[in-house]
Image (tube, rainbow, N blue to C red; front, side, top):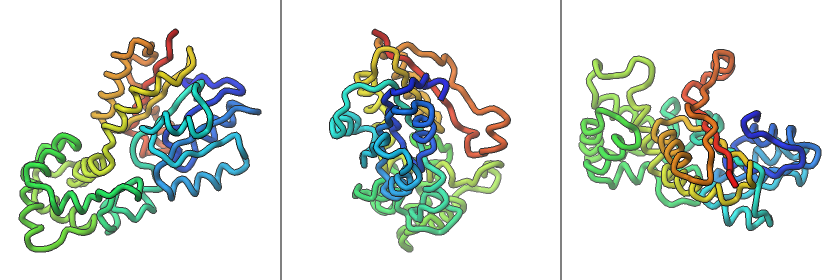
Length: 281
């Protein structure tokens, strides 16, 4: 909230509403009449956030769109410029814990991974129809998985015997494909594969680039753009886009990471990186 430099009565974009934590804080800091335009493409999260933030009334306007559709979303609510924007890339705790869409292998769920159920492509479809090389590329480029080729070969072999339809099915195949000596010590061996599939299903990197290209055009001079990412690929995109945009002054030469107190309170923040830039005249 400090880096967003919130002013009373300002208008702000929360590009990833989730369960509404950031929007709530922005509304509290911008009172009594500040507004938030919140974007969310997950209908389940959107519904819960509406309920949680109902006390703020019409100070919150929710748009059922991905943040890539920033321009159309702002046009819907009659806004052209805002005082600041915040996006928090990646999965929410709601999607991890109660999504039922295969984002995590801790529970055996349908291998869906769509954040927006209106999108046609599922993770199961990618697993079922992609070639071995396509799967290896997805695992390697989006998950930075060194065992990508071995894992892709195992998936193709296994799908000839049965349908890989659930998160448990896929995690089992991936774990069996890699010798134990190559299993990472702190995370499940399938973690990067699941991350890669989620990025591919939702076209997350392209969405991020598209948003960053458009966002500066809707910031007032002095307005702040804050991006929280959890993946090195995303962080590199943010760093590059900030540096290459002549209308932005980068305020964080290095990403801001959570401190010891935050890590203890919220272990899921361990990979978070915050970068901030300000709109120039």
